[in-house]
Length: 64
Image (tube, rainbow, N blue to C red; front, top):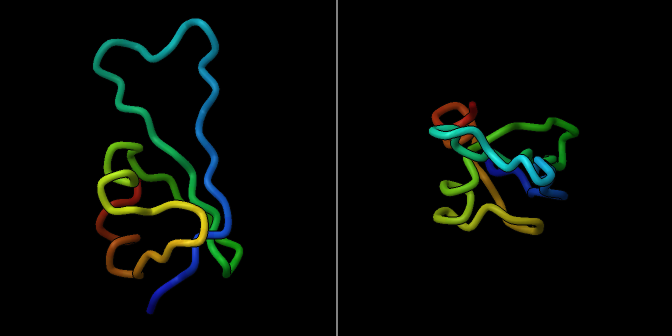
């Protein structure tokens, strides 16, 4: 089943940024009310942005 991404939230790490080795993640809000967290790099590569779609299989495979 496909779910529409209704919003995307990126963390605000301020001037500290990310710790060495820490991979940034984003939160995707889905049309069914769920929110899932995936790595930012992966979301960009897969085109998971507001208005896009993500499958149940990808949610299960890539959620962090």
